[in-house]
Length: 342
Image 1 (tube, rainbow, N blue to C red):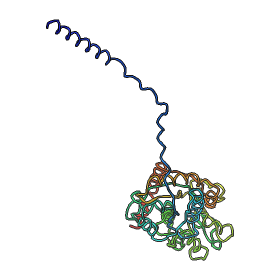
Image 2 (tube, helix red, strand yellow):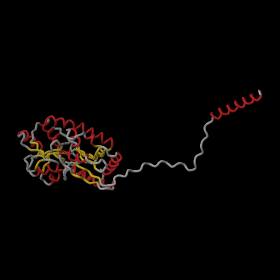
Image 3 (cartoon, rainbow, N blue to C red):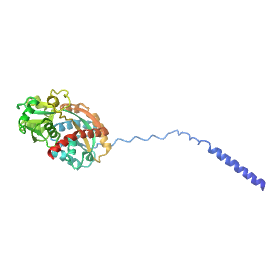
Image 4 (tube, rainbow, N blue to C red):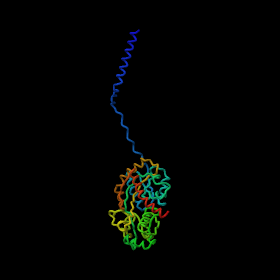
């Protein structure tokens, strides 16, 4: 019996040593399969657009917002393979168009095409919510500093100095066209404050309406982007007296307001494409990719050049940051405007 117990104890010790030895060895490597597992497929492109897309613009036909939006829409139609159309919805300084958009389903088939007045309207609390609670910026497409001061060719003023001298001598007599609460209105207020001027400010409407009013002699002066009045300057029906820019605009033989009068009222104009909040981010990104391509095509570049603008596309976070930066810049004009009217 003792011999049997000794034998069993010896066998247990052998098994224990074998187990310890095996645990110290690396795990056996599995032989590679002759047919490796296929790689995971990349996500497929979203199935958008599958129907027509509509740009809703807060402007009447014929102005810079209308014509630039149509130029971009034509290029995007080819790129996206679906019609991109434009719906003009002027009124309420943008509120009519915005309310229409926000009343639709955020399905990626309706977008806002507008300009810096989206920021100004928000800063003026014109909308029910701030712009960044209503929209996601898809892209900033381009723009420039070619907002200018125009008079009818029948007017007695040939230079901006002559006009301003007359306004100082006859306060409140010279009528100037604007749209209440729009960027042009704030620029006029800024010029008045800095230059000691007093115009008779008339709310006429968008760029096309203001040009018509000046042509018809309903107002004496108009402030608008150059392209809106360029055909009438070329025909001799209007004169451009100054441009509201930091430096001379290439191709535009007009002095800046600052160099002619010392008044540093400057305006930077740019266009925005935005989708209502709730739109699939993948759709916003896909439209942004298309705009990055199409904003530099001959079609859109040609339309922008009519206004002495150039494409300068920003998308994603860069676009969002740029809009916030410009909003800070415009805040001073809004504060000045509010101080006068509120």
